[in-house]
Length: 141
Image (cartoon, rainbow, N blue to C red; front, side, top):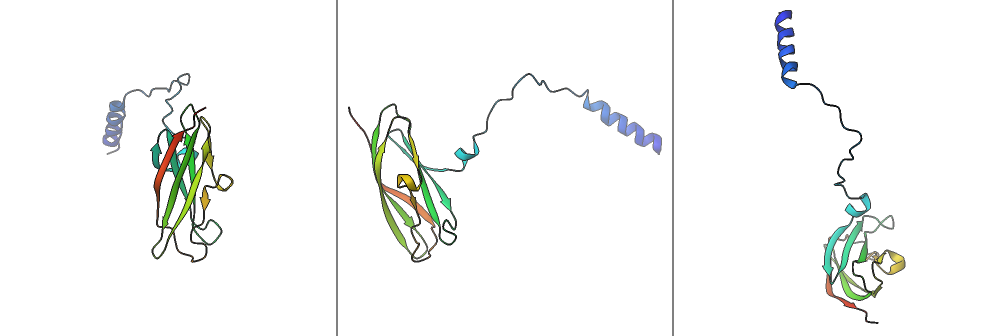
């Protein structure tokens, strides 16, 4: 029985072939995105400006929050304006966002007017987020 097990083991190993060493001088292709890129959920791209969001459960330790990120992929400045719509099971709220982005600039967060806790008073949960009237225009000059 021991001879039979050894023969099966040798036959199995024989079918695998020699192990190959990895070439440590060749860099593997980079197919991964940085964690901070994959965390954002894209909403729309309008005239070269990408709009994405992050959802924060219990942003203030109690209520849901949403932050937007705007990134101008153009080589010229733009003016943006839109309405953000927040929907929950029992409530709906809106907020206005408008401003400018320089060429290649990114804005996000409360300091840029892009963070909201829409149902702070009612305690409703954010179930959906949407945009209405997205307008992105080139700033001439």
